[in-house]
Length: 148
Image (cartoon, rainbow, N blue to C red; front, side):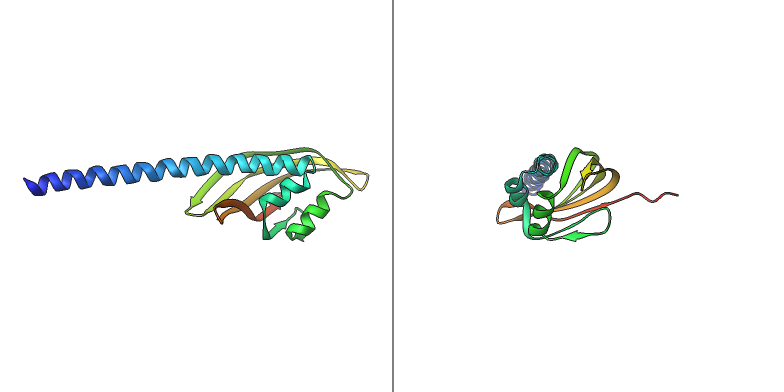
């Protein structure tokens, strides 16, 4: 009888821990989704301080043309002769791994660079990491889909 009671308590506790992990993962997923939105909006609106706060100090951003930027380089690029009219993410899939989140999806951007209009419809991957209790973007990659 004691073994059956112990087993019942054990299974209930195990279920509680699993439910807690699922709730935490959903909460982190919602946080990452909100951060993606904040990152996209700050980029479009040229909000350097918000961009800088979202990027880890050693972050790497790779753009559609293959150019890579550091945190400082990307924020500077965004404050240059770039005007972003549209910046949208869609079909986001978020995969959580303890203190890392990998986000994949579609990205659409249009605007003007150096006086010339441009438009991209990309595939994107962003990698977020919880550093010192705060989620920060450590890597971002945009690439044009291949034309097959």
